[in-house]
Length: 162
Image: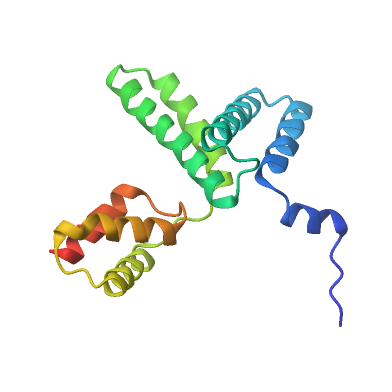
């Protein structure tokens, strides 16, 4: 039995990140969703900035994930500042923006998956001391491809090298 997949779904599955963002911007315009439109435009701008910075023609999935995670991190920092200033309405706005951005990142690695990745990288590199933590961090970051926060990786690496 052959599986029939509509052509538009095949196209969406293989769509480049920039095309997906453009499509979502159009949809947000049609729905008059100002918050979503604003977030997507800022994301597109950040993508262009990253492309210019890296001198690349197009972002691959890993670079796209890095850009989105950077945008999420900026908003998390803003939330912290707004909480200290007792600006609850701005905290809610930033949380909504984070929710929108999280639609574009792959599911984060679980604690056990990350732990296994760190242990295998330590074995591959033959590292035994904390002074080689940077090498392990670099290896794990490449394997995780933006699916894990650097802070989490650092904690697990330091725990395994102790």
